[in-house]
Length: 134
Image (cartoon, rainbow, N blue to C red; front, side, top):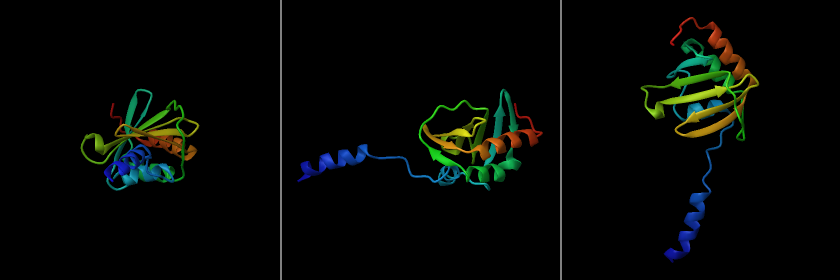
């Protein structure tokens, strides 16, 4: 009887897919990153700025995104979001290009999205910030 179930279990283990997300904001929220508990830094070129004050706008822009299949992303803005210490599970990276194509990197996984709103919000947050980190 056990031998009959082994192929079925092996098939199910191979068919695991990423959790379904409606938008990029859900990726952050389901992994413990919220508007309330997160800190963020935006990087454009070699300049890194603190954008904590713009987190609500950035999360709102991500809620208007669409999850897409894998694509190449040439980031014009990178956003590092943290919700605690610098443990891998408490840090997420979001890269977005001017067109709005982006990728979220978290614990070795990549989730791709499209959001022209987020690209604009990231650029705006970077410009509004006066706190240069690096």
